[in-house]
Image (cartoon, rainbow over the protein chains, first blue to last red):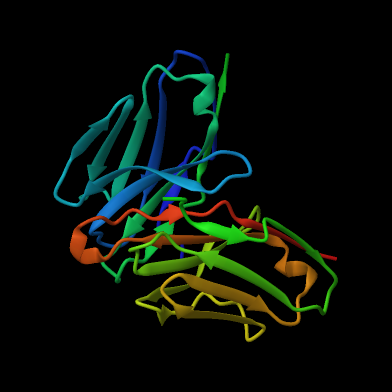
Length: 111
Length: 116
């Protein structure tokens, strides 16, 4: 069953703007991860936030987690054309390493 | 490290033929995952192994699909016989032992399978 659901499905912004993507999930989690996929490539891990954390930063990325609402958001600040990709959230429900991926948000950053 | 290696990168075959996809995980990783990605169904987990043992194969679509991991550095996903609806990109991913506190998965470049 689908655990993570991203919103929006597609997002188009201008270079320099911020991009926010949201993820909702259904069951309790051990951690939540965000991945990026460039066209024709495999997924690349971006950032992980544990269930006892509320916010985490990595460079231009900021992730928040609200376990009471079962939701997370990924913010990319000062976006660049190279950020154009699909972004997926994935939840780890402590099932022995198994992740459940959402359907992804397709981000387009126009120069 | 070279990362997760998959072969072939592209495979075109006719319906009814046997297809074998190959994966070499990152050395030291004891989890190996097989995923399938399509536009319609997104990214689906097919099966995963821990220490070469299949842990969860509930995502395998049907008996035409089988996966093996004969040793820590090699895994195969076989489709026999293949059907046009099997056309997809198949990804292999690996991750470190959970005890090391690192949970991220490392994906290979994928195999694009087209069944005509």
